[in-house]
Length: 499
Image (cartoon, rainbow, N blue to C red; front, side, top):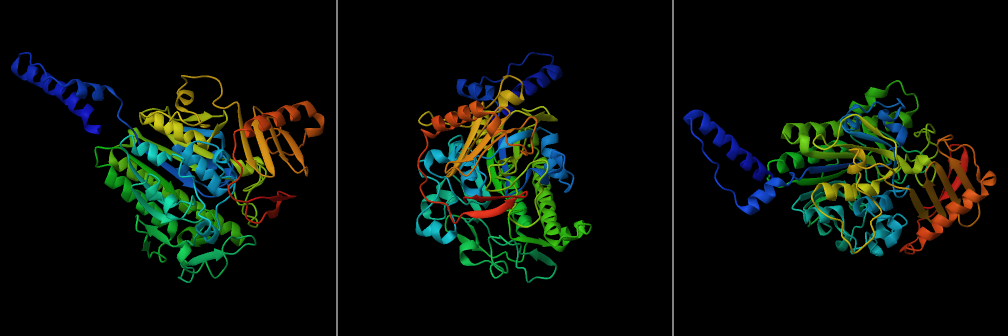
């Protein structure tokens, strides 16, 4: 309990005050052994995981590309640590989220491809294996109050529903995408680039499968007149304000759907980017600006709560920018985007702030993974990793505090058949198992992956292939197939990739 240590400190303060006033020694009241044991433990931190959707590495100004200013998001890293080489466990939404929630490669439990579209998801009962322990369930066992605001995308049927997977509260949507606001309202701007997941008829108002729902009974929230990024921010702020009053710590998973398509924004944000001539790019930038404002509102709520010092705040994206949507993504400093195994599809923004535990202003260049959020958080909360399964994430705290040297990960690997890839030190291999291509890059000298070294480094290719084969022995077959493969030009090179 948060108040136990405060009560122990208060005994000492009262004893000292009585001594000064009365000129005599007054011993503090004896505390029970149990109370002393609890008081000696660190106060468990609150935890907020903020997840963006399809946000590219180049979309955050902290990473050196100044096309869109994100001062509030940047602030998290400036007040803690910015990870330059952080990776999602998949370059697509739902497997990446599964890995974030479990700390394990999604292919360990067959979650290799997206579980949508919504009709298939419900009909075939697809979702995060019920035998997997979510971060919410692990923290709930540590006495945390747990809440999810935003996008779930890990199954819509009862077994997979958030309040059955460790969340005390849920408000959001269950599918991979939904509309932000009724586009028929005045001042709403939207674009429909080729490749968008929602048709023009669906972006006017939400159909039943894409509704915002709340609570275990799935009460429909009729908020088509409120921009969804602002709504999720408001609900996140409310959650912080309510739970900061409790003696127990809280965990908030705030999963924005911005800037995932459809490309929709309101006038307030649209007006900030009059200098961008291309309509799709202007709306996309405005959506990210709205997301940055939303993050700022949550940070301000944490500050007002008086618990900012002992609140861990993460910010990250589930995968790279949706480069198949027209001209909205950048090809610098990283090539490629969502669905591909280029760096632009899998290397993502990641920042972490914990004033009580992390020195501000750090830039961490060692390779890390979003899977690390699970063990880092659980151990900071006083818990231990379950011992009945393999965890691929590691506790990052000893690395960012300097207690441990070396690398958190010697290698990271990805499989979305027929594509596999591995990063080991500065070397990156990705290939098609059906023989279409084999690509090898040295990320230290060629971070944009422009020069394929596979023909010049056959021994290195073989060693990396062997490492992938050894890793794959512990993986399951996919429990469902990819949706239709998508073909698009990836920074000038056409690829056909699974979803």
